[in-house]
Image 1 (cartoon, rainbow over the protein chains, first blue to last red):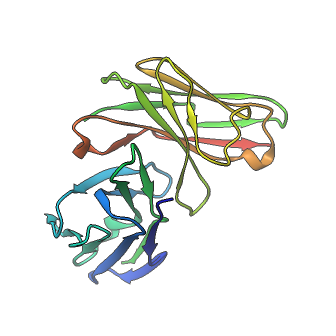
Image 2: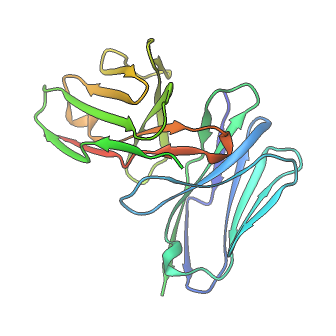
Length: 111
Length: 116
């Protein structure tokens, strides 16, 4: 079945440093979504990428979808303490009615 | 966007008892709802897809007799953990998908189940 791998599992950064999490699928995806889960909270939808090579930005967050539609990344520029949480990618297979979540990257930010 | 209400947020129960968790779509008629389980510092594990008016579709390895899902209306799905044991302690979350798909999953706030 479809597998979605996400790295790194944990990332500790100093406030102001950049952060990147990577997501790789074993199969070609129709789209990929990114979610953020704050400690003690539930996942919240951030964005969806559909097109090959697509790049989307949300303020300090940059999301990319690979040309082969099998990998994606989330980059945060100049992290802030409010960025703390676990970031999940979720890949929708081309014939799937549901998505597969990556294991998540937990970001901690030192003020 | 859609709003999903999940209750209770926390529950402690004795081993051997059953616990029911409710997931309500407040402003959208959801023919499909998803139930997940999340272990500490782990990812979301899809347990089952709940379909309004029909049987739920369970993922491989999930005991359907243990985790009973009922989706009796377009706004309510319930997950009942039967004969709970300490190993069932976990964070259970429901979600819906609202069209268009690019709104993503909307998750409930989750239920922290502790079986003692």
